[in-house]
Image (tube, rainbow, N blue to C red; front, side, top):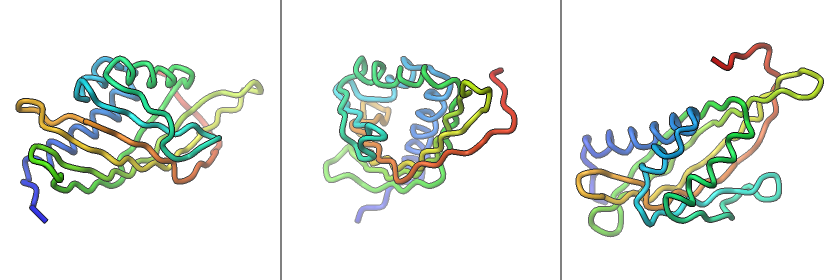
Length: 155
């Protein structure tokens, strides 16, 4: 196995963190810019399927897919683990990312709940000029919890 340079690991970690941040801030265009022009984002369809089943291609497709976040008043995606390896082809690498995604919403009775998704991302990164970008990102939900929320802010 070829060792990935520290600088590249830092680039991949930054890419993954920006994806989470831009999703939480609803910065769809910035988020889509983290992907190559021909990238694919493969998402689950909960509760029907927890594995990656719906494919969105290209930056416009990725923006369309992530607009589903607008139905959730507040999210927080927390990266809890990441492993990066050299890809099979030059200029590529892979990543396996563990994430906990919190999705807060208020029910009709005023109770606030957190729908917690324990996620695994399987990534393919490709060098695009001097920048690493997602070429493919597949998302799997390992399990889902629902938690009560005592207090929240939308600031």
